[in-house]
Image (tube, rainbow, N blue to C red; front, side):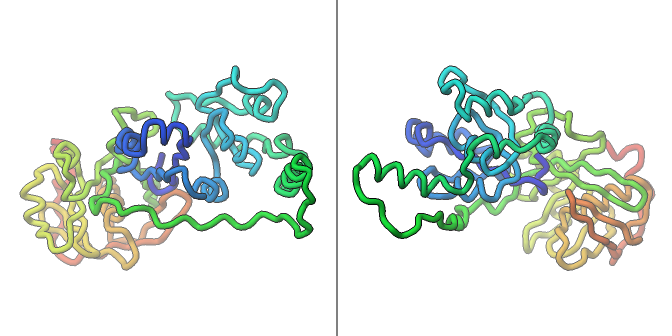
Length: 321
């Protein structure tokens, strides 16, 4: 999934979480966690907040798929245990209606197709917003106790606690850039989980990594390295002969060969570095104002050269070596 456009949360069923243990679940999903996956423990209300905040879901025959559909969210089914679902139930109807995940097609395209389908919410319940009061009435009737007189209303879901601290070294990213006129469209994907699948990537892809990336393979593939505070860019270039551009430290970009560009305040230097490589690869002048598009957001950007002269061979025939 595009790194800047999606946030992904896994609501693992409590039986799986406690059956295998939290350590084992996190260990299995560690590459995905490094790529940005959120994995809250089942105790608490984070899964409820996720359903409130989500735009789409990927589920199975569990209750969360039903809750998400009742919220009106579009979705896909990754699996469905039809033999464990009551025939004629809302869950059975949902299993017949929702499209199945195709594991060999880009997921973003499948979600976009699911969004175009009619909402299933109206078929999940005939009493939207009233389940809490109806269930309380049912429980007290079965208990043969008088029902409280005060109204039974749902309360707002708690805002989740901040996620646990993450590594200061961000994930390495595959960056797909497309230049159209004076617009640079950038899509970034976590590099570690790609496993060679490239149906969702364009032909002109480069790698961005932290200069402290511990995986030498990813660091060696990187065209753009993000320098740590206090780092010497010259030393970064010397240690990484495949690197073409160092982003930082601070709001600046340094190209191998000596050119330096300033980055406007508030702009991610790594994103600006990817845009700069794309413009230079098309033979365009990065000092001219251009539009940087990331997902649905577009912003006008101008990179100012602060040092060095143009190197005509920088992205020439031998650049790929």
